[in-house]
Image (cartoon, rainbow, N blue to C red):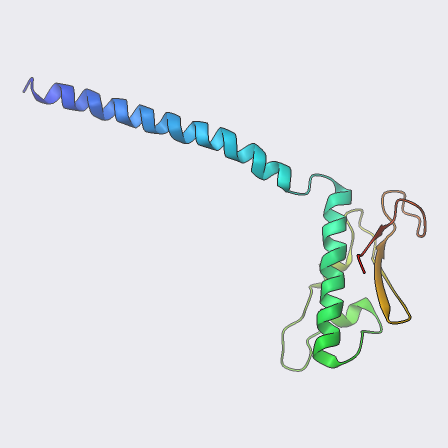
Length: 127
């Protein structure tokens, strides 16, 4: 019976050691994952603006024309699924995005933190 006691102690040692390694790993990895996630409303809106712009490009590829309104990308195209849910057309401040088209250039815009369109804090899609 005494021969089994050291094995039990080693099991607890390895369990504790393994747990320590896992905790240390998580302490190193979780902050780096968190830093890559959108941390502000501006970051979240910037990402959503690009997603909406990409959906507009996909709509044009599928239909041969740009949508006349953002709501068109939230509707199914034939028997295909929708490109975006309606909730994706709202920025992090709860305001609707605006789509503008000039000379075949599509722009998706959020009024940004101040809520006023065409000011320096607007969040605009890349072209």
